Each structure stands twice: as C-alpha cells, then as structure tokens.
Image (cartoon, rainbow, N blue to C red; front, top):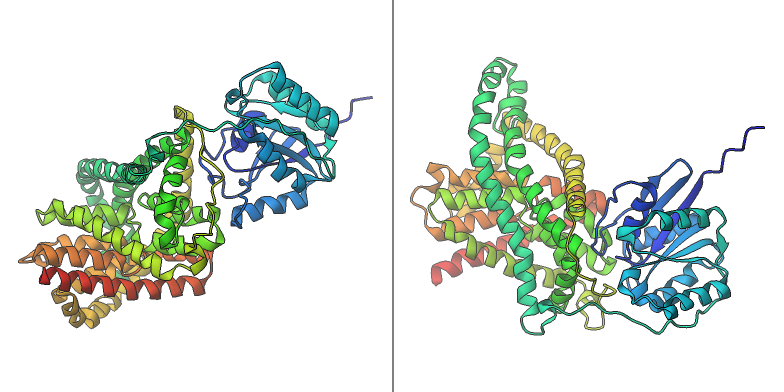
Length: 545
C-alpha cells in the first residue's frame, strides 16, 4: 500500500514584538520575511507555506496597550490550536509569565530566540531541561537570524507531535535578564536631540538625491513622450483632457515615476537600515518623553517620519499604534508629514525663487505647528503621565544586513504601488474631468478674494486648490507669474498654506479606509481650521517681525 500523505499543519507563531517571529517563519519555510527588526513592523498576519506546513506570522503582542495588531494576534490564538510560542532569551522570565496564560490549553512548542545573547553554560541548558520536564513542552533555543538546518529540523519534527501547554504552570525563574548596552541616544540631555537629527537625516538626503535624479531623467523622458502627446492631441476633447491635460495620466505619470519613486526607494533604504539595525527602537524610546505631552508616543513619530516617503504606508502602519494614540498619529501624518511629492515640490518652489534657505524656517514652522495641533486634538488620556510607554524594551543594535534592508524596501514599494498608485490614477482622472468642466478654475476664483487674509495675491488660489488634491500642485507657485515680485514671507506662507490646508486625496482616502469616512471628514475639517489659523499667524507675525 502507498504511504498516507501527511496531514497539512497550520501553526500560529505568537510572541511579543521584536522577538524574531518573522525571521523564524522565513527560515522554517525558506522564504524571505516580509517584516524586519522594528517593533510593530508586522501589522497584519502573514502566511508562510511549505508542502506540509502553513505558518501564520502574527503581529507582536504589545502588553499595556490595545493596538489593532495585538487584537489581530489574539484573534488568531482563538482560531487555531497549534501554537509556536516565541520568547526572547534575554527576558525569558518576563515573556513566559506574560504569554503562557494566553496559550494555556493549546498545543505546540516554545522557541527561545536571541539565544546567542546568553552566555552558553551548563546552567542555561539545565534551566531549559528543567522547564521541559515540568511542563512536558519542548523548548528549542535558537538564533532566529541564523537558524541552522538541525534547529529547523528539530522545530518541524516537534510540530508533528505538539505537546499541550499546561493550564496552570509557573516555571522556576531563570534568574537572568540581559539588557542591551546603552548608547548616546539614552543620554538624558542629548539623546532626544540626536534622535530627532537621525530621523530627519534620511528624509532630507533622500529627497535631495531623488530630486537630482529627477532633474537628469525628466528631460529625456519628456522628449520621448512628445510624439505620443502630439498623437493624443487629436483625441476627443474630454479624453484628451484625461490623457494629456493639466492633470492627465500621460502628463502627470512621468512626474510620479521620475520624482516620487526615487524618493520612496531611497527613503525606504535608509529606513530599512535603521530598522534592521534596531536603531529605530532606540530613537523611539529616546523621543517618547518629549512627545507624550503632545499626545504622541515615540513610536508614533517614527510613523510620521515614514510619511516623508509616502503617507499611505505611514497611515497603514498606525495599526501598530495604541488606540489611545492612533487617531492622533493619523492626524499628525496628514498635517505635518510632508510626503515625497510635497517636500520635493516645496524644495522646487524655493529653488525657483532663488531662496533655497527657506526650507529651514519651513521645516521649523511645520514641526512646531504640528506639535501644537496634535497637543490640541489629542485625548487627555494620551497626554497623561500615567500612560506608560507602549514599547516593551530597547532592542539590541546589530550591523544591518543587505537582505533585511532590501526586504524593507520591497515592503514599502509594495504598499506604494498597490495602495497609492491606484488612488493616484483615479484622482488624476477625476481632476482632469473637473478641470475640463472648469470646476477647479471656478473654485480658485471663489477663494481668490480670501488670499488677502494671508497676505497673498489672488493668483495663489489656484496652487492652494490643486495642492489640496495632489501635493505636486505646489509647483504652480514656481511659475514666473506667481513668483514675480513676491517676498520670501509670501512664498513661505503660500507653500505652507497649500501644503497643510488639507491632506491629499490619496492620504484622505487611505485614512477613511483605515478608520471611517466620518473620521476622515472630521480630520480634514479640523486640519483646515488649524492650517488657516497657523497660516494667518505666519503671515501677520512675519510682517510684524
């Protein structure tokens, strides 16, 4: 008789943040992990499959918090019976005490990661052996980043006959606790400043380099597209507007791929290096005391800075934020996270005005007003001194591997192309239709008289309207007629108003999908009011000074 085909197993991988769950799932299946060494980088369940096994990698469970990702992980625990519990060797007593009650009555095994951080000795092996004897559950110590073939085989064999987790079992404490070595980021005086500089540096370098690349690539691409534009000019009027009009797909498409994509790639590479090395976690912890009075946590600022590449992945990434902070974090991203379009267009306007130095007061004022805005809208509980840090601990620093950096780049690009690009194409079509019917010009005419409130000329209305749809509409400020006889304060005020008056439609639609349409509409209304007030303060205060 032929041998029976083994039953396909489904195993849920559960553990706290940054325990190496994604690396372990990838090593067991021979796939590249989707997530990297950043707390909260896994924001949805990810499936890894072999012929005989399916591993469901869950987001890290974050204690003392109620993130959407933690709820997702707990839901998987309710659905499946076989659990691969991952605990960190450096804090094994804490992890076991917190996680064992969650898996009581299930079946599986326990993998102890970061075993390379524990000094090997007979004592450490005896501890694991004693736990196995008293619980009847298999303990396998590994370094998830360098899983050996024998360790992989041990785990897969143990899953063939998973042992039940005891209902009530309190392991004798191992007695060790290994903390990572401190760095300058933990300095009480300079740590916060260093953390801010480290976060801003990738955004500035990425946009600067990407703009240089765009300046080189854009002219030849426009030259090659010229025959296509001439051919499409014979299309029916509305179709012509959609394809080659001011917001046409052919007109705006090169700008997207020549300008935004290099920025997103470069920024993802920088951020990937930060994540893979564990540096992001040190920055997060260093910034938390500074941000809590404004209703944000340290991890939220990381999400906001991620928006300098693309706001869509940043908004989706807020799933790993506590519900106490998440809506405030989304509001801060929509208000103060200048994405690749907005930041690049802003630099282009300042350069066209021969005032590149305006980027310094612009970023300073944007940062200041974003903090004030979040302080005003944040719930009282988020600003409380009793709201404990929602990050379990600092991670160990390590030299980032290129494979991990590239994985992060792929993840960001995947979100950019699958979430942002389709919405961009739809918006380009809608904007083209509205422009063809004269709606956008009419709107600009209606608000032109209001520009005087900000010390701006009437022609500034059109860039403000367009930037509320797509942030590259800021580039209209760079046109000679708009820049003529304009003061630095007017340029600064106009760019600021256009940039923060409303989130671009791609961001707004993403937030509506992540939360609700009602929340997105309320966010836009609050942001518009705050932007008008801050812009008037900038215009009037600047004149007074």
